[in-house]
Amino acid sequence: MAKPEKAASTRGIALLLASLAALGPFSIDTYLPSFPDIAASLGASQLQVQQTLSVYLLAFAVMTLWHGAIADRFGRRRVILIALALFGLASVGCTLANSIEQLWFWRAMQGITAGAGIVISRAIVRDLFEGPAAQRLMAQMTMMFAVAPAVAPVIGGWLQSLFGWRVVFAFLVLLTGALWLACWKLLPETLPPEKRQSLRPGYLGRTYWRVLTSPAFLFACAAVSLNFAGFFIYVLSAPMFLMTHLGLPETAFLWLFGPAMGGMLCGSWLSGRLAGKLAQSRTIALGYALMIAAAVVNLGLNLALPPGLPWSVLPLFGYTTGMALAMPSLTLLALDPFPAQRGLAASCQTFFQSGFNSLSAALIAPALWGSTLNLALGMGGLMLLGGLAALAHQRLRLLPG
Image 1: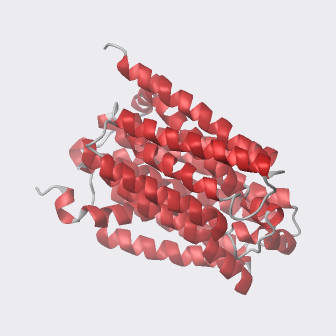
Image 2 (image 1 turned 90 degrees about the vertical axis):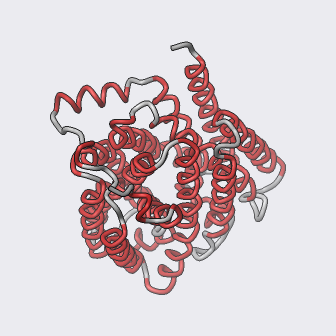
């Protein structure tokens, strides 16, 4: 029987997997420019509209703990197709919502289903490839994935400006339908029946416990999550950062997402080029060097200058370059100890990160978005904690046995 990689080129499968992984972030970023209009239309406060993001991220985090285990049992392709169909229905609900409470409910339904793409795409990478080849594919996915968050708020801003917030969610319905058709036609099944795992409670309980109590797994996940949060607080604060502090209109979100996603493209490209040529530990160290430099520059600019363009956004390019350079290696290091339960381990990894994203949306970003200096301090502090977690993981790997 031919291997799945024979059926599709690396670039083609990377594009499809990146599209699946990007659906969750796309459904975050597209409607950010619509926050003021949603508040006015539904008679809600800005905080209540912000909570549509918090409930999405919380539901996303809780359900990602299960997507991988379900895909380990029933296969990757079937679970992806069902999750996409349900996400499309939830997007219809958001489009038709007549109160902030209804929007909370349908955003939670989106969150429950959106995580399948990012969880299962990571498992598919490890189904198909090992070692440097897996790192290269993960880097290719990250490069393509980086385009979506840059484009999403620009599309959302123009849709909002021309048609209003409901059309933003209607656009997500159409996008999901197109992605479902692409997966139905092109996505191979990468987990053969003989490798599928049980859903028996006893087996699942033991496996979840083994994964979630592994110090190496937890440190690698913490590093990825904290590094990402150093940038994600800017995404969560985008309406306040861009429209209040920088005085930009709702169509100007590219000022934030352009440099940030450009950095992700550069970092991912570097990771792919260095795969097999530089040890993973060296690649991660280089990524942190770039993040540290960017965080220091960001802090210095905020202390020396008032908020403004371009200096308030340029450090994000350097930070996300380092973040994306380190991310593929850290992600693979978290999954490598669990070759027979890659889906479940990917679920736990995504649960860890999305859970921290939810905490960032509910508590960290609102506490920091009052000034650009606070956001710069938040970036530096979160990155520092991530670096300590990566260092702890490296020391564990060096221990004998």
